[in-house]
Image (cartoon, helix red, strand yellow):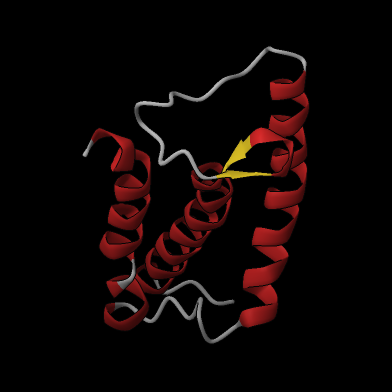
Length: 105
């Protein structure tokens, strides 16, 4: 079970923030361009940074806490999923707080 901890954490983050879309009208999923504009740069910039750091030996990932599925440049699949999931969670939270406070878009 240890090898799925990182993936389980990411799923947990999404499961906990997904209701914000429906309960507080975060409107993240209804705005795919905005969602992509938030996620794609994060994946590209931090994915490149991680790949570079791994190649130079400055950064590693626990084999015990990841599934072992690797992408090019020895990047664990969970790390790329992190760069997708966390911005989505942030947008959901931001959108919900903004709506609760009554701020205009």
